[in-house]
Image (cartoon, rainbow, N blue to C red; front, side):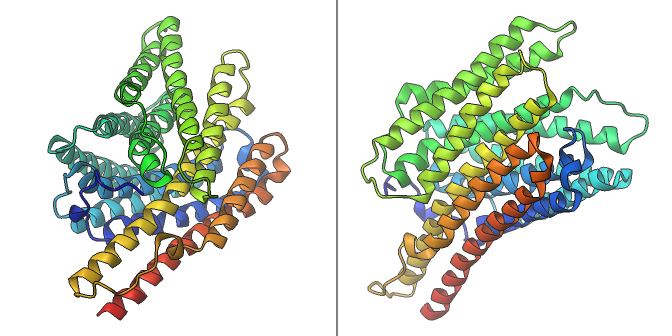
Length: 428
């Protein structure tokens, strides 16, 4: 593991990211329970209330929860720019995001306008505060690594995603406010291929070589890929929003978006083939599943110009949310959490003057057996979800598989925390 470029002495308290990481799988479990309750009717169309609720439980409750926690951890150690008052900030962001997501999902399931209004207040406050904190830290970043630019563009994409989301939610909260449904596609693309895509790309520049012992990404590739992707998003959105439409702008932007993500997938897979150690690694398996899903999703997105069918839209969404984003986030958790627990245990030992005391290594912190089970159950859940688009009777088995996989993830992460607490008590 290569850590020479990290400012490890500035790492925030362990509770800062862990409260997000431990909460996220519970929202995914809640999404699985909603699918179990509603059954095949949930995938009748992309506009079904149950499917909208599940989508936001996964994108806000799981993905945004992990990504916001990870950003607060990465800013100090990757960019030497710590978050001011990290524990207070993380508690505030976590509270707003948790309550706001629960309110939004409840509003989508019940149709109650008051729940949408409350969700707008909580999620809007979370967006403003989180973006403000991260922007402040990015402006003070001492690193000139390409990750800084990628993260800055990811935050810009989050602002667009959040703004569109609040606008769409306002259409549910206010009788007098009408929002065109076409904005939901912009909301999805800016969220999954902008905010999530750019953040994954920027973080990958650091964590893939560090944890997977691969060569570094090529310099020009790192420097130019995030701006090309962001410009593609702007052109694509402009082509869809300008009066009368601008098909050439939409096509140019789409090519930039798809080309960027396909290039990132291919380059990352090639780097992984050249890693120095060829031992089996659950993190590598999750990354490969994620990148394969992303590439298939990009092909499907291109095919939507020829095959305009609701089932293609559903397949595209599942591949992006569950296949690409949730797979790569799960894989990164299996590296980031053990590393942080090991780092904080090491710091505790040094502070107590117990230099020679043994502490568990990263592979001993999270159960490799449960991790392997979680990968296979996650892969099975993804397969069943894709098949359920064609055969809706498979939706409840898919939901059961989701329930198993994210319960296993939560149990694994909790096991690491319990180990940490046990060792800390022993040190004291």
